[in-house]
Length: 145
Image (cartoon, rainbow, N blue to C red; front, side, top):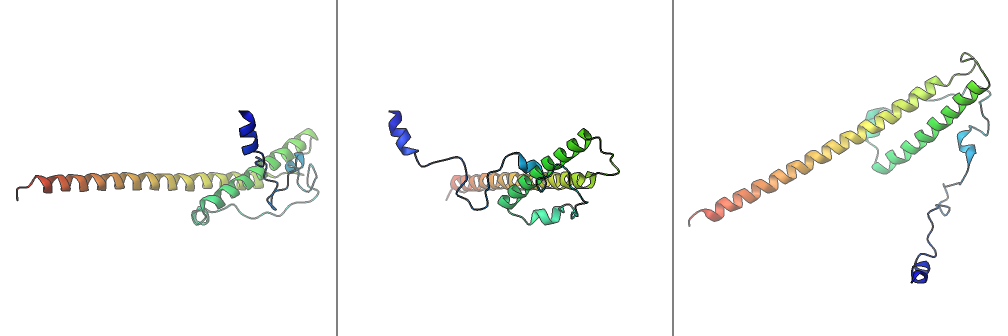
C-alpha cells in the first residue's frame, strides 16, 4: 500500500534546490561577508516607508519580510559577538541598522493589517448588499400584481 504512495511522491522534495536564487547555506547566513564583525562601518540606507510598502504585492512583501528577518538575525549575531568579545559600543554599534530593520518590519505588519481590514470591510459590504438584494426580491415577490 505504501509503495503506491512512494511512487507517487518519488520526484517531490521540500527543498528548493532547483531555483537559481536559492543557495543552501548554513550558519554563514548569520555572518556578513563570512566575518563575525565587520571591519569597517557599513553604509546603509533608510527604513522602508509605509507608502512604498503599500505599492508592493503580497509576494514582494513576503520576500522583503524574510530578507529583513535574515538581516535582523545577522545583526543580533553581530551584537552577541560584540558582547562576547567585550567590544565597547562606541567602537562597534549597529543600533541604527537594528532600528531601521525593526521599523521596516513593523511597517510591513501595519500595511498587511490595513489590507486585512480593507478585505474584511469589503466582505461585510458584499454580504450586506446580498442581504439587501434578497430582501428587495422578497418584497417584490410578495406584492400583488
